[in-house]
Length: 271
Image (cartoon, rainbow, N blue to C red; front, side):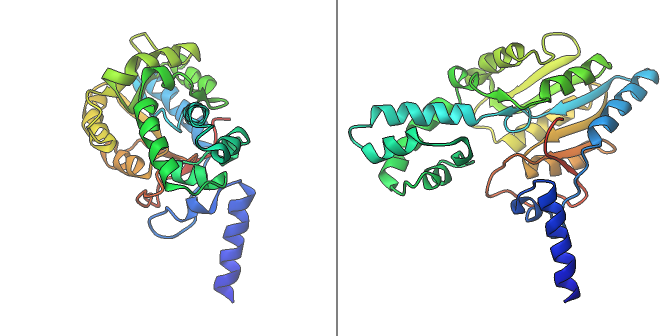
């Protein structure tokens, strides 16, 4: 009875912060995650302290589902596909036309289920189109910056921090669009205190690239903090950036994600 009461209290607290139950399930020891929005201010203060001590503070940010919401990119691809097959799959077309933002999931499988479509043939055709378009300059510019993200990153940059955008996007097909998107939203980019790091080849796994890139980032200055939405990546940063503030950004992540290190706190937004 005591265990049930404790669990109920934890559940109530989680729901009060607007967190999905999936978050609690991705901690490595089964405990509730540590919600610490105050880390945004702590990171800024740590950057200011480093500058005062004549050090160059470095803050690392992922892009997809960390600074940018890629739901608009997904929606555009799905809607374009639906338009081309509206005569072939009229029910699918109608479902897509009625699709709400909350229906858009991490995976296409779940997105289609959310709009009432359970057709493997449609899913297979859509996946091919999606894969050909999603990882391209043309479509990456459709992503929308999360509310508060630009202001927060700009605040760190103004305080003297070097901003590193460390992403799994690849250089050949996505760097141009990514740079354009950063500029359009007025994220700090283009000076000596900001840099975009992209994979040289698409075939390289995101976590492998980020591990390699982390060694170079450590040479840039004092790594103050890193922010990412993928559990595997924040676990990596906890190891390679000793002493840094490592934060799990709870937006969405791979459904096959490994557990988050229980000592890693999380935030929900940039406000």
